[in-house]
Image (cartoon, rainbow, N blue to C red; front, side, top):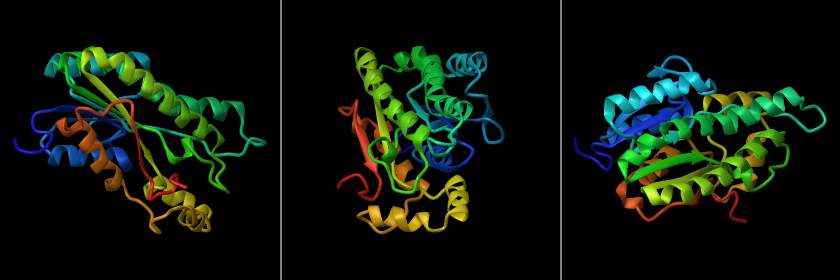
Amino acid sequence: MTGRLAGKVAVVTGAGNGIGQACAERFAEAGAVVIALDLVGTGHPCDLLDEAAVAARFAAIGAEHGRIDVLVNAAAFAVFDWIETLSYADWRRTLQGELDIVFLPTRAAWPWLKASAKASVINFASANARHALAGSPALAHCAGKGGVLAMTRQLAMEGAPHGIRANTIAPGFIQTAATTRHLEVDPAFAGRVLEKNMLKMLGDPDDIAWCAVWLASDEARFVTGADLAVDGGATAW
């Protein structure tokens, strides 16, 4: 195999659609051995909020490959609602779908990341972790992604002695199946996003995946604890 990620063993969660799918595809093109995890469908099915299932899946991956060089925690779930109408149940579901869904795979992968000795953990924060976008009912999502940002800095510190780097990518508004449904409900939302963006365009999953390829590669060997904004300049002013 040839390519920037030749021979690397990469686990990508949420690989069935959107950003996770783009990461899995670009990683494979770059030469990585990709283990694609999702709730159903593409790759290996796994409920990433089931502690026992996650532990078993990563034990099997480790037993087969002996190490994990890259972990991409792209799976996520959020309920979007305003403070006045957001239920406690949906608040808790969102924090599970933003935080637990990163914690459980990372903890299960940790021994195999240590075995790599030069591993990369790539998590996803969000522009919403740094700014509030007018008209976006994203309270729980903002809290969850802010938590991912802080969690990843801690992982960078804990992983450094073992050669594990940990970074976040903070996407702006990316056109996926989920965000397309949001635009169908509120067509004016795209205009509010573009008003905030320096680049007057919406991103797509490959814009994020190429950043992930770089973070996974040895080219980024001196990068850890960083948050890379890929948001058209939305958070730069």
